[in-house]
Length: 194
Image (cartoon, rainbow, N blue to C red; front, side, top):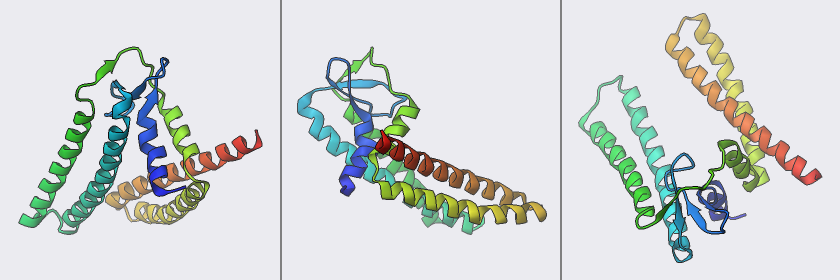
């Protein structure tokens, strides 16, 4: 399975679905937003635009993480360059919102379309990913939890409340990664058995 097919399965295919009349419906703001009927001649262009949005969101997310880490490392003393970095990240997020808004330009809002639940969205995403990524997620979740738990215990013993908060967050993320990977492997095995 190629990288573009994985991106499509995780993101694009989840946000472009068919309604009961067989028309393509796009959810530019995610499943919590409104759906818009998408003419067949625009499906290819919208899919390409959504791929670009996803790549831009990933890049901006990593960039924002680096800027945030530099702010934390400087103990809150923000230099001019860090301030410009925050401004650039903010403009990047605004650009993604603008790109999402452009996807719905000229489209008719779908009124009666029942949105898939978040559970269905997550199940479909897990089934669309390659099996190796689910096993990798399972292993990564175990590693994150294994490294976060001792640090949490140390932070509790030393009354380091910042460390407690950080390690609780790390454990929550690791637990989610572990849970998602385990559910994906279980779903794949049960689908194979059926």
